[in-house]
Image (cartoon, rainbow, N blue to C red; front, side, top):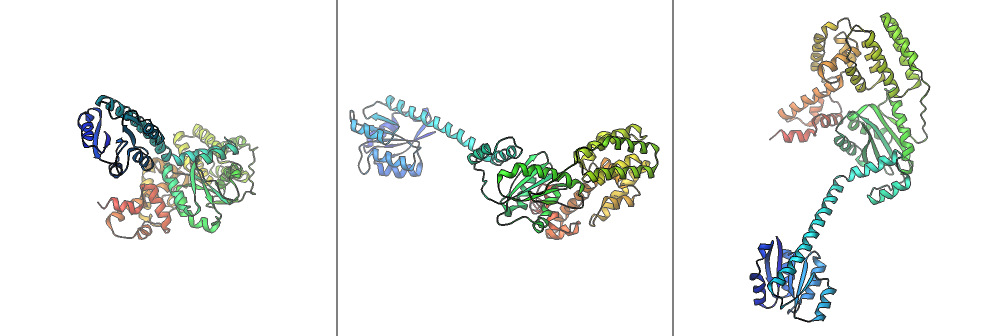
Length: 502
């Protein structure tokens, strides 16, 4: 409903305009009347009319002065000026203050209605335009981070030039000021990108972070390090909040970056470094400077190595197979081949082993498991379990139940797959394979889900503090507990307690 304010010092004129025209039939209503401009201005500020019908000649404040004041205070209000016939000076003044229409006081009701309806159409057009602008603004605000992340991704991946990047960065208000940056590249093991980004931003909050996924499962975090440089001490403190979302030890930090201009080249070095992380499994992250170089040998002949390994597997000589596997691993590790090249070779081995094995090997499930394993040692253990099948395979369910029973009784302790495998008299690789098949998750996932499930019970059933709960379910470091709780529960421990207290 369009709201109208009538302003005239003559009462009969106000009453005539109010009651001789059926305003509501046309989607309009008279919300108030005023006898002079000053009174009208106060009413307008309070009631915010859409249209003001004002006489040009009034005491205290005339119509043109009122239009001028409204134009300053509330420019969205449309003003229609009423004046005596033939007063061209008043017409010129009305144009000067940008009133919406000019009406002679002698005009009949039909003419007044037509004029007001025309102004109403203007308002409706402006409202639609405003709604569209607001809609676009809301869409932009909701996607502001995505827009900036997309621009950064295209630049870092060398899909646009530096000049194009700088030009677009200014338009979308992307802050690229500063002369000291660090980049953090993390391969994630978590599908909820939004929660992962939130966790990374929280962990690096002292460094004005901007985090986004540059490729599938590959997150990059831009940090400003003029005040707080990222060194080993800082990374060790931040690690508990990051590691639960990380695939293995795939964290690379590049320091001493002076400009955004260097980001594309730096990114390529960091991607190479991720491949080296795969083989340096004793370290939880890698710290770099722009001077560091990584050279991966390109001429790696894995086919002859694979053929030789298969020849040993065919003999079914356990000692011979173990020796061949050790040689295969040593060859790959020495050359620090890329993870992808290593995985491709392993998958070929799986196909070959399945062709000669008496065991019914599900290649698709094995490939899924390979993708989830974080270290080359775990992958080699898996291949060993395929090459040397367990003689107790018929007792799989019994052994899995024994493993689960052991885990449930010792989840508060430091638990490793190798330790549980020894308890149930299986190789770590074979246990890993059948564990995934029986439970639907890896050993590591199962342990963390069990611990968090126990933590959820304690949150609901006790008044223990969160750090006390963390210790009771096997987390010596509260930050690790907090990060895993967020990852598995989808909320913080505090939020979980609040939600389940009602």
